[in-house]
Amino acid sequence: MDTPRDNSEMREQYRHKVGLAEMLKGGVIMDVTNDEQARIAEEAGAVAVMALERIPSDIRKLGGIARMSNPGMIEAIKNAVSIPVMAKVRIGHFAEAQILEALGVDFIDESEVLTPADNKNHVYKHDFKVPFVCGCRNLGEALRRIGEGAAMMRTKGEAGSGDVVEAVTHMREVTEGIRRLQMMRTDELMAEAKNLGAPYHVLVETAELGKLPVPNFAAGGIATPADAALMMQLGAETVFVGSGIFASEDPAPRAKAIVDAVTYHDDPAKLVEISMTLGEAMKGRAVNEMDESEKMAGRGW
Amino acid sequence: MVDRTGKPVGLLTLQGDYEKHRQAFAALGRRTFGVRRRAELELVSSLVIPGGESTTLTRLLDRAGLREPLLEFAASHPVMGTCAGLIMMARGTADEDESDFGVAPLGLLDCTVLRNGYGRQIDSFTAAVRLVDDPVDFPAVFIRAPRVVAVGPEVDVVARLGNEPVAVRQGHLLGLTFHPELTADLRLHQAFLRMVDEAGDHH
Image 1 (tube, each protein chain N blue to C red):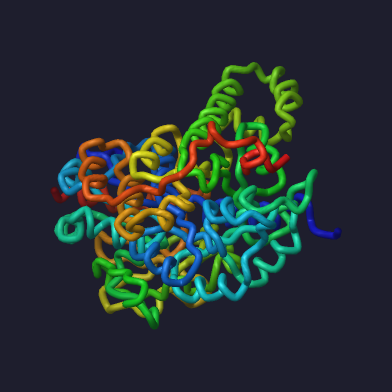
Image 2 (image 1 turned 90 degrees about the vertical axis):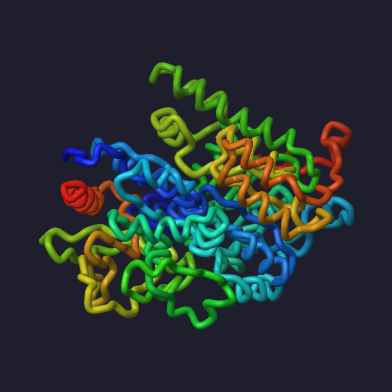
């Protein structure tokens, strides 16, 4: 490949990618499967929508291979809303990513929710003009993805479960890892990079900043305003809600309530008001009762 | 610079990259305070409406009952909007299907903007823009940026890209189509603080 690997053009492009992620902070990104849901999401105040053929809870139920969505349905969603439109590619499937970039999506999620296309490698994301978000369970995984050019990180959580426990675990893992870095002497950072399997330069930058060098969002199992508020207080800068909205009893008010809960995440009185009149949340499945083979979070290397 | 009002710079913290603005003002030694509720407007000298999503900002602003209080505040206090913040300050948008997307600007600045005026995210770019009162260009980051397509007679152009206005000022109101909070160049934040200090002198 003859793509530039590290030059001023690439760095400037990367700044635009991270810049868009910055603009999404303090907002909610919602999974939608058609243009009608996309409009409901935009009306509720979503900062972006994730276009996909099936929400994760249905991917679980139906089984089979989950792939990039049909470009036609993504295009219909792009035409329906003015907010950024994201779409998912399989881990390592750079050809799917090329197609989505040519289609003009605003963000690509290289996602463990889809069936991985590569058992060793992720997409080299600096090759693309479009920004990528990737999931992580811990600091090492986050830093590897940033090293490959991810402009935004999110916890993996356990998508489609309606159970927030894994998102909490992954967020705490990442923040604890960063706190550990900050206590280290400079001469200990290389060994820590080795331990974590993380690129040294991104690790050093993270130690200096005291946070990931890209925005860090929460995803995977968030179903209620309280879940959103919890993740924000644990250090998430924005929240993804997948199945939590459109698998619930009454999606529009729930969508709006989760948007408000992110803005007022530190105000319990306001959260009471926001949560008061909501219908049933999605039923969900407890992650602790799942077989290892059912879990999506283990995908990614 | 001395904060003559004794009050911090307000940041509208409903949604967006307000944290980057906080860092920019902190680098200039100035305190900021987040505003999400009506009463909080009384605690600040001025207000920055950050970049973010203008549809989201519209929804959150109206649900918080902040529209009228913000109009009142802006009548006598400096306000700066960057990107989506400028869209919120504009008189109107030139989007063909504005009503579909439901962005309702505040109408503070007498200018019309076109949302996503340069295209989608892959069309985002950095360019040196010409400042009217400074010979050194400003490195401006445009992300899904709006374009100013019309300005009223009371509006002064502060910066241009080619011949097109990308920063405009009307009295104590300043609007930028780009993101000075994403670069290390703090001249535009300094310019806003001078406006804040001038206004403080009159209070």
